[in-house]
Length: 317
Image (cartoon, rainbow, N blue to C red; front, side):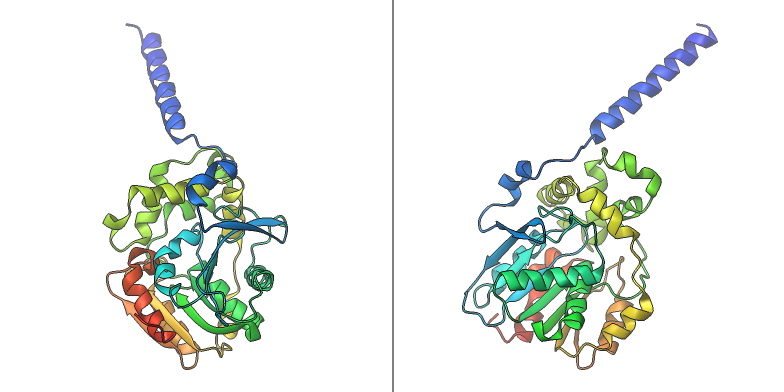
């Protein structure tokens, strides 16, 4: 066999491998209607707000004067609060939504994913649902939105629960692969069409202290909702933003609402020193650290992580 034939066979093998890899990772956007059956079962509903069809769940007693609004983090969805909702809705009205840019809600028409814009969105949602004042609880990005809303609209927020919240410069010891790739402009054309499920699984496992708790259904949820049309572009836009630390620090210290701060001791994305700083800067705040939990305590161990919330709100365990 001459060298030309060897090179040709090598090239054909390489092309075959590339074709197989692309075939396995090929994942174009999915229209929202194809995802609703699995991820928008009752009591989900959609409301028109700011040019979007916002996916939300509104449960518990309607006569609650101060409902609890739960706000998820980057690339998550309202489902991350399933466990907390089950515990809270017995006595309180619990409202949760897919934020603009994520879940079934999908991209914001104006492409604006700044924190102040998200804070205005939360208040607009409360207005539409007839909620004058609420307890806001948020995880990661959602925690940042919660405290930002409390600062921008202090009369609309009665209490705060911050769960591994954003707000200070990251001192990450590990960042999910999906987040890192979303920040690389050159990969945008590729990432808009290719998305290995294994990459989503690795990213979810990265934010759990115990990766064994990451089930196939959990990976399915993150994977399929990431494929919702427009969400990958929204994530890229959101990841490009850089909040001003000096501004954030000054705003956080101005918070006057009673605040409960919860943190996973094994959070490698927003490490525990950030939790200590929130506790130091928010006068009178309470601080609870969960050993053996990571960046999403409400999802990794709902029963243990909601327990301090029940006490904070003086609810029955």
